[in-house]
Image 1 (spheres, helix red, strand yellow):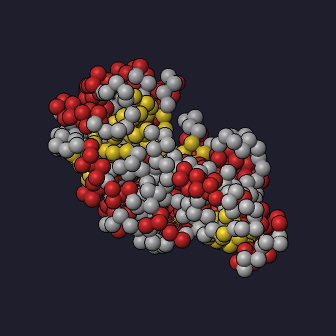
Image 2 (cartoon, protein in one colour):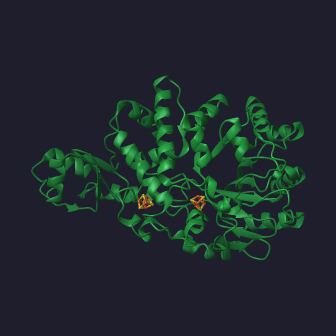
Image 3 (cartoon, helix red, strand yellow):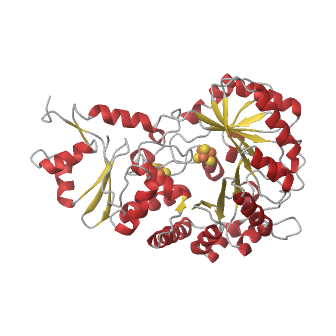
Length: 473
Ligand code: SF4
Ligand code: SF4
């Protein structure tokens, strides 16, 4: 059969500028059309314009026998959650913490009176993991500040290493820590066991100390950077995130990126403050979505300036959005549909409950099982509803021009709306995501931005060519 027999696929559009119309598909390919081309597409009058016909066929808007299979394959890849076959088990050994940060999703703190994980529960948890289909796992210690019970970290590692089924492997141990309880003994252990570290650095000293203080109101910055620099010198992999609040806006994106550069970090993650957990009453920290977007845009502009001078840094949301725009793989669990809750990770509490995601571990609706009294199969059944929350089930997302690249966070939806379905388009994340994607697409033709974007898209492009289309094959 030749190209005379074809069907028109579903597509979504957005005007980017005069004579620039973005056209996207549900399977994640896209192109820009000028007004003339767009008009021909709308009127389905493209058969005699060979260049336009090929352009639309290349991205799978025109479906023929020769490209339909690659369109189907690409759609399947976007939903192939098991491609990497790696699962993150978040282990909460204690909910105590020595800091008293302005916000804390886990509501941890010095006065926490919940019990720490018992040795008996550790064995139950390993048994639960052995009953799951996960072959490759990351063990991530969260909390609370688990280094307050360093003895329990050692014990859990010992138990899982000697009791995990032989066909399963631990890919990484990860310690999420505020770094302020570190000492030489802990550091030596981290290095020896090849742990990765996740921590928080909100920005320059004054900002970090304002947001992350000890109960006596003294700041934690000095200890954080001391141990981060120390561990980095010893070859430990460290990642930081920065929680952006109304206070952060006073300092500006550049100051935060400079702080990360000074620490030798290759990327920064700018995470908007959520008013839940202990941050629920901190209305003084709440930003308008417009303010966060402006802040993020300044950060991107600064990253481009740095790239002009040969310094390449990334911002995690930007990097993941670019990857979603240029590849069919959805490897970041927080920017895909369904998101990674209960699919890429579960969070295990000290006393038995299992939550679909660590950031939702205070949200009753995200409780999906119990590793002391239940089995993996029950937990899986309880997570089915979460697994169906794809864009196809979300009002407005379903027909949004960014539907193939975006994602919603169930934890944030519950915090904002007490529901798993966000109130698009009023939702903070929806507004911000829409503006971010639009900014990225608008800047795609600017060689300076395209150079950084190409680099962030990862291997494969290998040049600085502005990325005008993304095709299906
Ligand atoms: S959350 Fe908003 S920006 Fe994202 S796909 Fe849905 S409607 Fe579009
Ligand atoms: S609930 Fe939110 S934080 Fe958790 S995996 Fe989903 S998007 Fe990420």
